[in-house]
Length: 81
Image (cartoon, rainbow, N blue to C red):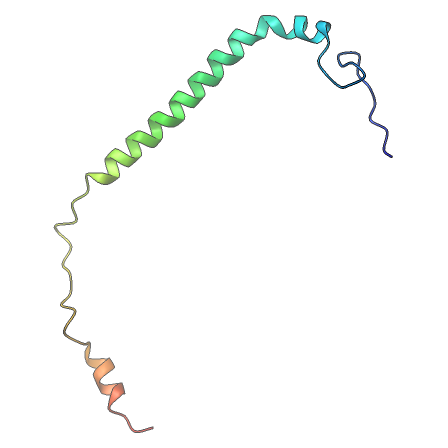
């Protein structure tokens, strides 16, 4: 069984000790605000991208007639095997 070295910040069940909670307390709000800002930025970029792409109309693209076959396919289909 591999031995996991014990840190002084965790108890024998590897739960956070009071010392670790005290050490992390000053950074809790800053980290939460930073995480919220990064998450908001990512959602904003995603929303902007979806909105920008959905506005494209493709009206200037010509769609070829599907009933007409290209000439090279008709020529190769009539070749003897």
